Length: 193
Image 1: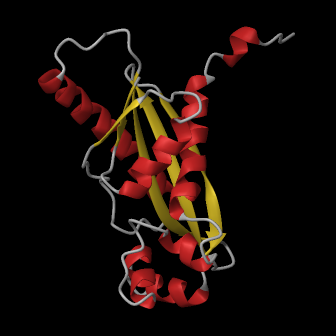
Image 2: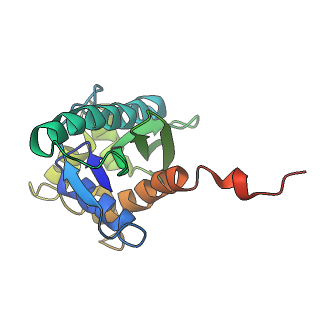
């Protein structure tokens, strides 16, 4: 199995690696620097979802190009997937700012499988800076003395005192999207009357 990850961020690569470890321990995971096609700080669920989709589609496209260049005799029966992960924020009706994560898996036939979760209320100090035009990662990094948290523990790691980190946060969402692809034929085994 070949899985293309639409990012070179080690958090996202490690999240996908963790997500597939049990079911696909021999999967080859390749990271690709692809654009999300959205703002650096997505500000709605819809925009964040679109970013994950865009990353997955671009990773599939670029990944196939890379396979043709580096592995011209790739087994055509092998599974090839691409996954995009995107984090963003959105406003609740009561004006609270919440964090959200979307994952999108695209298979070689162009089918998409999406999941969403890891939602939490953004603390007011961080929300205020984001509303003023900031991006969550740099805002929290600045609060932590300049340490780049996007490629490590993430905002969730800072807020929870590393009880959960960004890799774990993204891994669950990635595993869910991959699981939707894996179980897509579930109805063939169901006895629906």
